[in-house]
Image 1 (cartoon, rainbow, N blue to C red):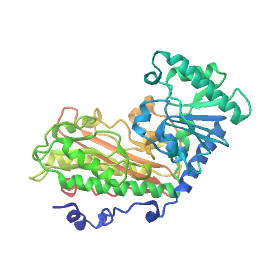
Image 2: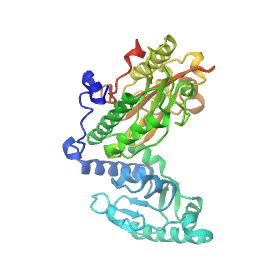
Image 3: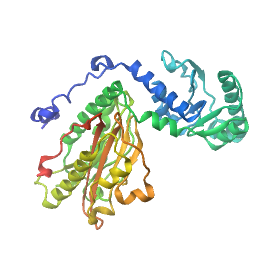
Image 4: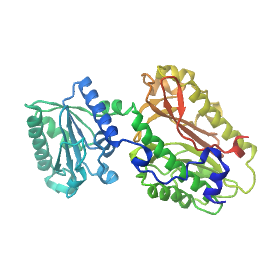
Amino acid sequence: MTTLDWHAERGDLHDLSLLDRTPESEGIDLSAVRLYRRDRVRTQMELLGIDALILSDPVNIRYATGTRNMQVFTSRNTPSRYLLLTAHRSILFEFTGAQHLGEGYETVDEVRPAATASFVAAGPDIAKREADWANEMADTLAEVLGGPGATIGLERLNAGVAIALSNAGLRVVDAQHPIEMARAIKSEEELKCVRSSLRATERGVAELRVAIRPGLTEAELWSVLHRAIIAQNGDYIETRLLNAGPRTNPWFQETGPNVIGENDLIALDTDVVGCHGYYSDFSRTFHAGPNAPTAAQRELYNTAYEQVQHNISILRPGLSFRDYADAAWDIPEKYYAHRYYLSAHGCGMTGEYPYLYHHGDFPDAGYDGEILPGMTLCVESFIGAADGGEGVKLEEQVLITETGVETLSRFPFEEALLH
């Protein structure tokens, strides 16, 4: 059966074959998306008394400006591309030779060449390079803000740079707080991007599902989704979470050369940074065939499905994180040890604030807050017994609305495993 044949059988998948995903065809105003996100960050900076942010996480730079460049590379080579954001100025320090990539964005006032202050770039002279970097940034901040002694938020910079900035007379605080709170609430235009990313990822998962056959390795099957994501102008997949047979339990065993056996369960978590940079994060579990699923496999699947559906049903705007944990589905004892580490989590351009914990984990790991309209959440389940056997991973991506919950992910569940 081909992917399109399978689509034709499913009325809920009629639009997954659409490949024309330009912003114009989707009615997305990307300028409005960028300006909304930048202004969200500035609002949080003001609330927290932060004069400037120096962002080096490529996802956060993209959130605040819409620009992107070598996201995986620059996430581990820092600082080599970074953004200085104040209440009235946005200066992108772009990677060597790539300054042209920051031009033409209404969210970027100026593009300057970045100075890479890392050991691989500076060698034994790293301390001098870091001091020079910090002094140059302090001078820029004094120029932009009209004086010295600013409070600046930092993220993902090597320790020497942070120390040098402090030595240059700047008050250093953590940038995660304003960024995560800004990212938590999505605009209507952002939600168009989220839906676009999900539709593209769902098409890729449909192609993967059709490609399943015993004898393939996990990596060979996983590559089908990678190809589909790139072909539809998505960015990359953050994790390697596709496993088959006994390697489905416990969860978090990275995709590898394991050969898929007959009648194995195959579990995956998409974790796709997809179209327009938005995260498409849902999980499904399939059956390799050729025989029908066993009663034990169906029990695992139905248990995971029950957990996800119950926890979606209790979500509502205004619910506290603590009250959510108290009302969340009780995990049966035989599955508790291998439970997923979260009950639900925020989702935007990647996984983000908030984390919603299971009832039993809340006293040690949980924190309180409020579920608000405009949050997009991923509701998780992993069901696998502590004494071994296969496991099932399921997850849905949802939107908190003014009145309740809208399920954003549309990929169907497996009827043969559900009944």
